[in-house]
Length: 311
Image (cartoon, rainbow, N blue to C red; front, side, top):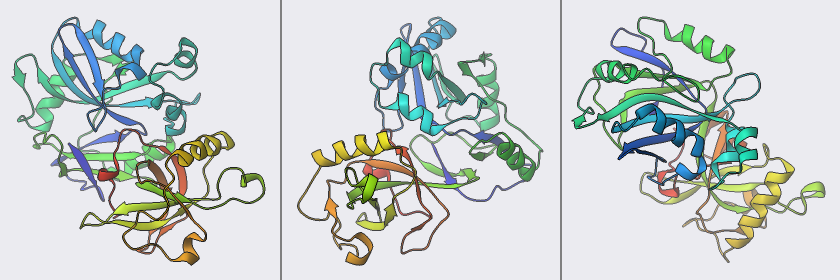
């Protein structure tokens, strides 16, 4: 179940949770083993072996299906998507990497408990069942939810603690797997969107060996890939080198857009197969392009088919 973007309803029919800057994970515990799956149903257990081990100990053979978010935290305790990138793309992390970039799983829903399917229960009842598990300590824990607390106050708390924002959830809402539902509303402090990497422009000076900017696209309501702008900031030198290596393997002779973007916007572009999905922070989308975009990292938990034009 996915959230829509919007303003928080701020009334008694809604609960509020914090929005964590991480990646979604579905936990399936069966036969004494717990496995983690990404939003697009890819098995990511190998990337987070310490979480799978702790979950196995906590469940002790109990069969559960849980929903949550994997996060990495800075030394100040703030979730960092950039830091999590160091773990997301590693299939078999070393002990050194696990120690250098520890991760946590924040659980916010329970979909099944043994033979009991819980998706048809209202949100508050599912939260009660989740809290009854008493997963309260890192690295696997259930963060709080709030009732009868003003949304603006919780937005202020999120801002003070460098969180991504809040998510409002109808207290009577059932869980609808795979659906983006208006019963969940996400309100980020900064706008973010996914974008498909369609090509790159030539860099100058220190960026001559990598790229100047990435050319971005998204799917319009008819499913056609359309141009939504370029992003040239937010990359470290190491990320630029790594991306350029991947881009070279995806080169294609022409643009992947049915209607190529204006040459003034992309210059002498180098085109690639539209298979990489990036996470972009931006101020607003004008219809012609993203304003003040900044690169946040690749999203291997999402597919190009998931990417739509920013609202």
